[in-house]
Length: 400
Image (cartoon, rainbow, N blue to C red; front, side, top):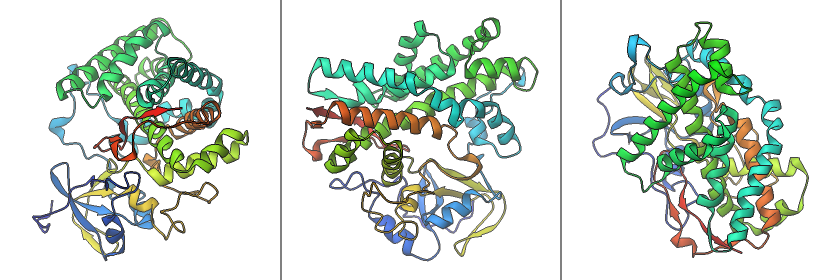
């Protein structure tokens, strides 16, 4: 790491203004407009922050920026040197080799085939919430359980284990959980999936874990530890981001009642899809997790980056760049938002984007159709937001 950084640096992720919690921090505008790149502290170390849309896309395609940013001492180890590999944190060609092993589970066709199951889960949890009556916590009662159970179905978690799976994921995501409780929850999920990997070899099904085992583990192309780690990553990434989008997206839609009404009255998939994409652009909940490390000296936006320097992609700033869309601060359900970086960009783009889109299509459309009178149960200034690499809500109290 070069030593040219300032000593008094802002921190990324930057806090959002209390009066505009859905908007990126106001200082990001200056970060985009200033020459070169801004410097900030990221996870306790200085990093360059890329905030312009075109610069972000170019950086995410640059092979001189590596996704292998996790220090060696933090990487898990296993017996017999079978260390589990986090495929999202390695570079090509190994990244591509491992990613291709799970790609078939997230194709457009396979995710669309899950739409009836997703609709069934949405109807179930929304129906339970309605039956209990207002007020309700949309995060606890709807936003969290739906995507966590969807990814469980895709992974092949048996129905009689879904309650256990839900418990571990809830504890792991609950902001009230201590670090020790989260670590225990992750350890329990990893241990459970390791057992499930063994079980799938004996009792195969039509699911992701079975395909990893039968096509790659038994053929020697993948060790069991990495198969389990890949599945755990899918569990966490597969529901945390979507759960946060459902709650934050609901707040954004309630701030734009005309769009919420339109969503509840249309069966046009293209209209629903464009609203979801605009929510992805407007909210951009992954606001600091896309980081890289330079493997050699390079220039980004006329800024010299030294080998070993860390670089963070400021996705919210990029999606609010006026060079990308006109009036980016406006939520426009009819705009052309194709090309947004809400799911990242390049070879490491979110592998679960197709699944997340189907889940959001079904969740938002059903919510707007069945609860047209939905509204916040607390004043907007009392909403409770998370402070983490992935933006979200601790709870969302609603009534109708």
